Length: 343
Image (cartoon, rainbow, N blue to C red):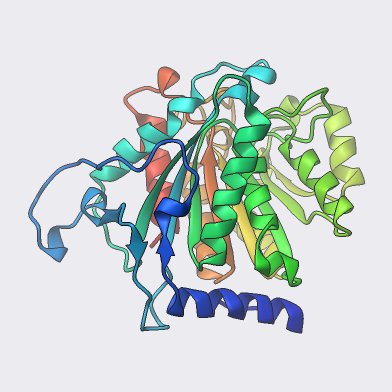
């Protein structure tokens, strides 16, 4: 992992690297609600050349320490089964079923990666107990991250983002000064001021939590839909110095330059993908389908760019609503992006 920060940041990330190489983790210590279930998919044979995701993902009790520093570190998947935040935000619910749909779509994809991938199971938000679920997911993620994993949360409404933030902010890397950047692929800022947290508030919550910790939130958004964000939201974004690129401006070249500039300012990246960033024809199964959206090739190239930077620390994908999907299009897009990021 390349590091451009000061000595404290370098030391924190070196700590993560050492743990990845020397440590093991007992996944039964994670307080999940639903343990990982067996994956299924197309079976072309048991040899490495025939391997698909369902054959590659492990739910083992412990992951072995790596002996080769040139190999990518282990990745861990965690489901966040929640649509409480969408309900509070008056959206169409059903995203709690998103993690299962993504796993189903991912299972039959050919596995070309070299890293170990472990399914850690699901955190389930019961009823309206959103804050409790976010806190529990955050604790599980912090443990996985401090054990050297690249973590990936399968959501869930975009309230998933604040659960992810709690995990990332609770790590040794951040405590020791690593410069965190939050990159959101989304049609919406999700900076809403509201009486209670929802899928529309997570990044305002992050900004306030960072301020309470004596830091500023370094937040950038790709794909903002101007007609779907009020002037008040733009004003909040400007007050918080949010960097953003409108959906109409997301050509391949402009997006590449925008992300490259952002990456120069951070040591570690939390990448969050709200599937409504893409056109409704590409991602119909979301709470708020996009009339315009950012094309999938641009989103995929951005994901490859962030992964290639060596700074990807944690990622999540949110807002898949299987009840409104068509031919599993949105689930397949989500699975393709997971595959791209976890090579």
